[in-house]
Amino acid sequence: MTRIPARFLADRDGNSYAIRLTTHTGLVLVGYSRHRNVQGTFEHCIGAYESAQHHNRLLGWGSVAFLRNHRALGTNRKAATHLCSLSLQLSIRAAENCASSSAR
Figure (cartoon, rainbow, N blue to C red):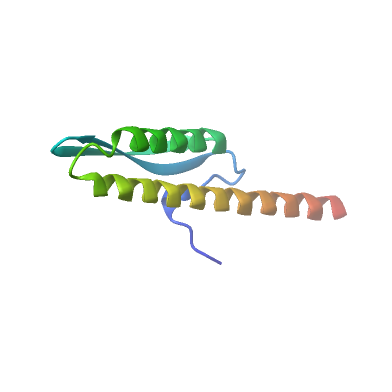
């Protein structure tokens, strides 16, 4: 079984998730990156991911440090992929638990 990093963990019921996102703002000669942890439902975390990606696509390319924006886009995408796979694993486990309890 694959070990999932702590930043992608959900509670046992699968109701609360956490994801770490990066936003990058480029300002001609300098760039500013901000990391934040978002915790909430799956939909809330995906909404925050989409918001961060939108911010990066609009405001991240305006500096000579644009490579940090490229890295932020990739890191956020990887975090969302882990979040989706975790959600899928939990929903499969929940379905298996329901099937095994109803078989009794």
